[in-house]
Each structure stands twice: as C-alpha cells, then as structure tokens.
Length: 143
Image (tube, rainbow, N blue to C red; front, side):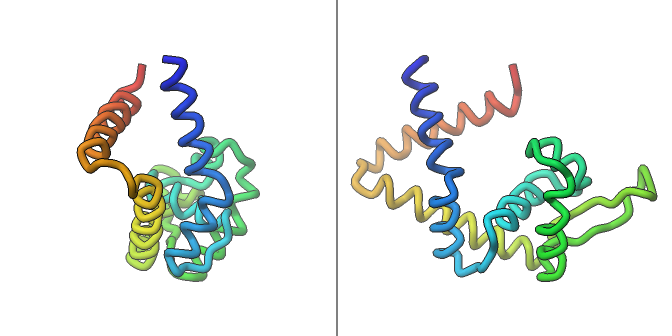
C-alpha cells in the first residue's frame, strides 16, 4: 500500500501543479488565471453551490473566491442565482459557455495525460483506467 499511496501522491502533485495547469490552459486556448481555472473546475463539479461552501471545500477564505468569480461571471462562464433555501444567499452554476470552456480544459487535460502514456501498451492503459475507475468509485463511496 505504501507504493500505491506514494504513486498517487506523485500523480496528484503532477495533476494539480501550477505548471501542469498552465500547460492545460495554454493547450485549451483559454486565457484563464490559475485561480479562474480552479474555481471554474470546482463550480462545474459542485454546482449549484454557494461560494462559501466552495471556500470550505477548497480550504480557502471566501474572499479569495470573489475576484475570480466576478471575472468568470463577466466572461459568461458562471452565473449567480438566489438560493431558494435562503434568499440572502446566492448559488453559482456553470453556464453553457462555461461548460464549453470546461470541455476544452478536460480535452487538454486528457491530451496531457495521453502524452505521458504515449509509449504504453494499450492493454496497460486499459488496466490503469479500470483500476483508477475502481479507486474513484471507492473514494465516492467513502470509508
């Protein structure tokens, strides 16, 4: 298990490093800051969601999410609506334009991973995908 944990740490560090995220953004053709990219990705995963909830999930102060949220909203990538459970609060969601942007980012992300695996045997890639898929499902189910 130590080897698995160490390998996952390396993969996670690579996937979320600023350098990798910059390469993904550059190849996507989108001009987003790292903060904008991160927030758009998180909104797409959790929407509709309050920024305060995202701040907790991301372990950042809510005030750090306001500037990227305003930029993403100005570009038409996210929208705010009143929270039906609390009219004083707002829920953030990804717009159609935001979904198209996310699609470009995920395509660029897949290309970055494909470049790492380009000399792998296709059967090994399939086994990796199956194993990671099973791990992903276990994570979703929780302990």
